[in-house]
Length: 196
Image (cartoon, rainbow, N blue to C red; front, side, top):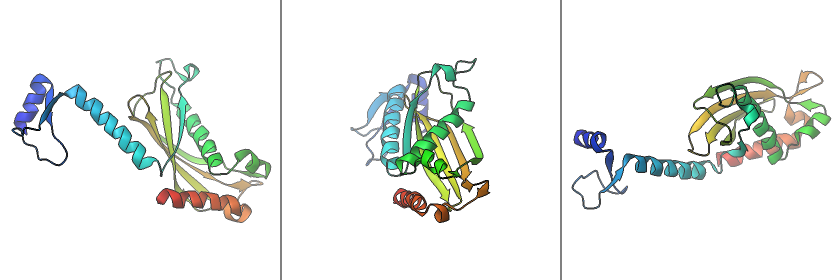
């Protein structure tokens, strides 16, 4: 392995094998590729694996970064990620059959009570960002949602986050199971399908 590392450092190449064979430098099926080719292939594999593993687990919402969302450094201002999270949350609720406007008309609102954002990489103007959303916890009173934001151009995670919201009516915390049983059932059904 040490010699292989030295070779990689010296000429920018590395050996690669098919998954069912051992690392054998003398094997006739060993292929030599440049490091940049291996990175591109690994990125493509990561993207395919991500899409396959997450398609039944995450609701995804895709948006394009706008020019007015950039800051003086030319990247998306950190405050906009929270706005994107809220966009994704509202669209997710609608996707599973909960119309947020109708919910508020019925006197129930769902304010955010806690939020956390971890920034991994910057997003530039006109980048397309895929926001993956999944339910972490739900007990009828509180809904905790997790987020993964990936830049579509390289599939790298740029932001991870979570938000916690509750349900209130007339200023008091309420249980969605008691107030809106059918909506409670929709969230629980999604969670069951997500776990599957």
